[in-house]
Length: 454
Image (tube, rainbow, N blue to C red; front, side):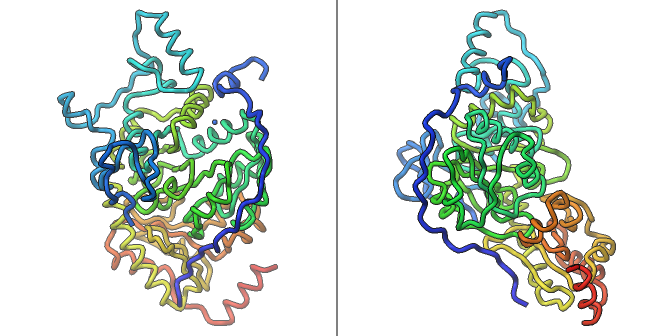
């Protein structure tokens, strides 16, 4: 069997879209608080001038983004460059919720400055909801890894996505164009309109035609959850025109791709997954330019979706081993994808061209029997941990998506999603082989297919 790799065709030219010049108030913070009502991309030549990052080799510099080091170096040192000067080796954990200040006038000026543009207050910290030094280290490191000016961390990935939508909604840009599949809860947040957004779902080729004057965001995920469908992000960014492209990079991580180098303005991560990498911390983060980061900070302050300092520490520590973990798990995943593709009990295998540690496959028999049959592999939602996880998307991660929409996006009822960890591939295969059981006969397959299509 050939491994199934979904990659959409290139997208045509963008249409002319007239944007409303009245983009709403400058300060998202003020609007939200008013009584009446945001394989190794790093191994490239450094910028000898030190004037900014040149991501695509065209001579175009990204202001404020330092020249990159190799990803293995950045993963270990980003966010920690000042430690030796402070006389410490491990990053400190600052658990303070508030900080003393004897200069109330100065505090007022700093808060006014934050309200104006969301820039991080200069000087010592003020209050935990405004910012935390430990969390700031993680944000600095993630921005370096993704090649952006800034990053803003949140309590979860969904809190991060919610903040992005609130930023655009506050500017009067409530319309979102999105491509399925997305993570199930992202799909639900957009479809349900819980934050006042209106979504238009399109194929990649339909992005340009779907844009409206009030379109504030285009959202994609590549490789997508759970089918691992891949998009030509550069073509998608071109189709977006002046509308910001938000790319969910949770599955790929900056080890495999950096969406800003292909034109995305915003990069979303569920940091709970690969960035943390050990299944013991929740978080979310948006990597972006400083202007958008300021608006995100204002929303975070107003709505309270802050990342706990201990979570920030664990995520920073997780980044230090990210390249090693992703490469090792990807090697395992490629091995398992090949074996699954050759197995008659498996009808289709999805594995992305860029690689990665995720594999999706469709079985001829009952997928629930496979879930119930694993012993070494953990049957659980989530992904990106050092141990291997398996789940049935139609029952769990994408259950909240309408069944017809789910199937239309390629998430079949027989699809299983495997997040491959760091165990020995032979042990993993032995567990999968046992769980797959005896290949069903043709009659059983036909009967089950008939039931599924009723």
